[in-house]
Length: 143
Length: 137
Length: 305
Image 1 (cartoon, rainbow over the protein chains, first blue to last red):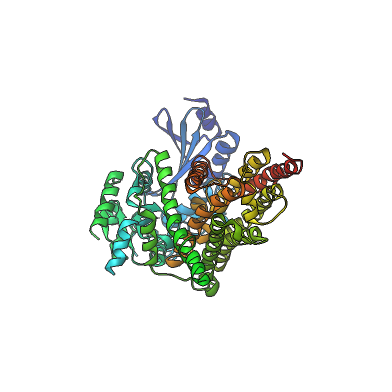
Image 2 (cartoon, each protein chain N blue to C red):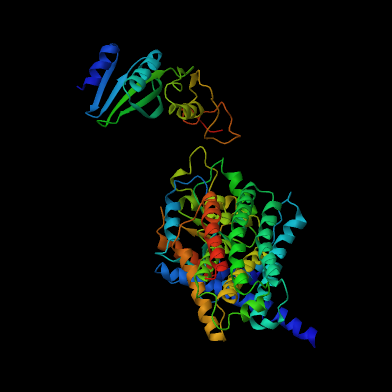
């Protein structure tokens, strides 16, 4: 149990930790706290946001934030869940510049609205793609 | 028409178009143009503009986004020109044929003359395909 | 009788036919030497003729909103200027007594019109990358004209101040101007300027393939492109002859061919061993390094060396 993990557990006591192996730690937290924990990990502890993942699961739409600690090579992945009918999360694009385009991509392909994002424009799909169809959802049938 | 194609046989100038590929075939095309494989003995030169080109080396599965751009590049190339599809994705979409963004392989939109399969094809295969196409002109 | 010999000189030798055929052969020689330096085989001997024939048979595409007359006129301008300057250089090499006063200035003018044709063509095709290539070519033209004039002044002053090509050639019957300090300075300056005029690395900034997609000649295809490439090939044939007639004249044809091949080999080797410069680095090189270098040569000439 590394000291960073004990610090996180002290700071956010309601967190659930799943240890995949020594270098991959999954921290499940509720979606209201995402800005706090992103500020804590990125700005105070100096971790780097490597990538974000969006998955459509049975419980809802899950977004994972992969923070990498470059000194030890450990990934601290923060996992949040929103419900599928009205997916909304606070944006962290003013904390890390790296999340700007990734949040645009998740909005475009999964339909998650990021509250407070300044530039939520389409990134990958073509100009004539219908904006209410989200290809990576499970119930996508084709346009 | 046939004397134009015969003149093209001895000096085909090549332009490289990559539409939504994974860039593996592009790396192999780049390797085929290095001094180790020496394509200049067939007269092949890499040119920087589609208006100078006689042969288009196309790679990748065409996207909805890249389709109008690829058609524009094909229209800008002065005819007669050869179109050479490099890689299995350009020949028939390979494993991406059911994806949401794919509009089909190249021969649905522009006339293709040579198909070079492989994922990615080796530079020797690319050169063999191009030379075989030139000798059949 | 006179008109017939004049037509023969302009159309066959040393005019149009000689310049185009031997010029294209020299581009083959350049590509073969480049291939050999890179340990590969290289194209066969008929390659530039096949390229030219293929370009003649392709369709010419004129961009929609370009100025069409200028677009079609620019390659003709470049080609004719290269042809006239090449014919004049070889004519005065063969018959030095037929030169007239101020012919070096005429040759200089026509040699400058060749890049002007490229600039006109690039500006008239409606393309931002061509405009970028045109501005680079203009900057390069301004930068290398200055040491070019200084380097041309050195043999003029050495021959006694006469601006006549024939006089300069005849004044070197005892000792060519190259075998003196100022002659060497002039020859080195001229070699660098030839690289820029021919559009070879390290000064092929205007036509940088990886950066601006063929730059000035981006929108050309077919016959017009063939004329541009032919203009460059004729320059490759006539510029070393200019250096030979100004600084190192040859008595008969065999020594001429040997001296020509030495200068040609230096140009090709410089092309193969150097990376490409940026436009501001090229400007600084021509104005602040070659400029004072050639002024030093003029001072040496005026003091007798």
